[in-house]
Image (tube, rainbow over the protein chains, first blue to last red):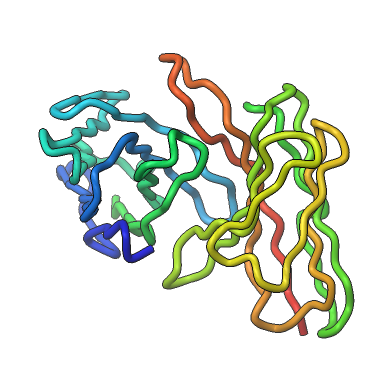
Length: 112
Length: 115
């Protein structure tokens, strides 16, 4: 969706390296969701952010929502091959949670 | 595991034939969604339901219809399939995350090929 821009579109990193994926909107994000998808499978929910400045972590993955609530970043520390997949951000941009708009996704490859 | 199943998981059909995809949930969620996922377009909402017999259109609803006659099942129908409807279709439900926030949980997907 053009309402939600993800960057980069694809990323290749060496195992052990850190990386960051960004999700940007021109509208206020009332809820920002991060999902991971392995090829041929469904989306797995990672975490959800709502408040400006909020930060959450799950294992080696940290997500932040900026103070203006228009950009989120997903940071992976010491990447592993198990982190490989497609990362998608989804956002509630004013529907009280009834509908989400998704970015196009970031394809992450982690080389051993 | 949000208790969502989709059937069939794979289907190959011919242009002009009707196709129905089924989404089944076991946890009595009110909201259910149908998305399609395509390269270069990401995930796009087709239709969603906010209760039995209550449905609304998403951003790519042309050529699709839905029905929800009971809470647990949400059906997506392609009345006359076209090659542009070749895609991976995902069903989702709206539930609560571990922290109590509204979150969408997805089924395993249906890969549809229209020849």
